[in-house]
Length: 355
Length: 76
Image (cartoon, rainbow over the protein chains, first blue to last red):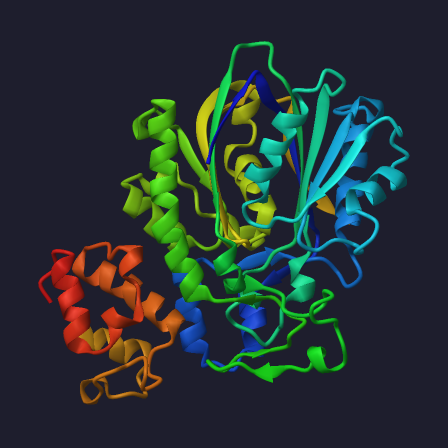
């Protein structure tokens, strides 16, 4: 499905990462694998450092911390926020929505819209699309998009398929109308029939969390995981990304009439270095134009990974200049989407630590 | 240049890969081993095996891995 948006722009990005850093060398002692095999994997996938929350820290904690930083630095004023969209797969509660919790904790004005969206690694692009649609309303001038997940709390420390790659974080992106006649193209596809490839089986109403669903089970490949934990069929997800994402991006560029060479950067979700290198090779894009260094520094932080690339890799450069970038998210749902947008001349583009 | 068998031996030294006709079914290669193998083959043979070809069928035995490399322009 294709989308076109007019006169919208991102004006600032703040990424919040927990202060707590874990290293792969530390974690690999938990896995039931010879050290040499784990070290080979570290080299190929780019696993190294990652940021995870301390026990008990929730999505709203990271979001409130980030917004308070923006308020305190004068980069955003609380009364300016007309809509707050929060994208997460790890909400504080079933009820109420985490966006409402954030609104309440920060004493934001009642004359605003709070909305949660259940999306993960594709959540930045999906969230942006929602912000653009809201900005069509006369009454909405500034939208805050929050992407946040604390998936480390749902990862089994004995599951080498998941545990060494998960990072926690939040991103706050401010979106406004553009005074210039800018055009943003986006393309999105979903396939719920393949949703079982990335799931947390227990904890909802279909399979409520019980003492039984918390028991670690031998799931093969020397991994132990409970039904309360995040499951990823790594091979299926890898194949899904390599098969579905390149034609989606190529279709988007064709629709927009933009060549690959005219795109300064392909800023993709950051599952691991290997997957992104293979994606770049498949698309015949130089590795330097598709950064893949987030997982080694912060871990795979779900819907925050694209904002993390934006802040970590492009940082101050985006305060000074505008770049033509193609964003691409892919993951749970399954969902895959891409967006071609002119990004830059931002008011802020920062990473901060949650303490 | 190392042979495919030598590279496999480096990844899983405990197995004799010449004696198996299905590495995956025999439990000699898991999905992460396949990725480690692909990275090593790419480097050794100067190719980039497409991500869409990283499927168990192409890593069943020495013949299927060599056939995949030939498809990618390498001479194993």
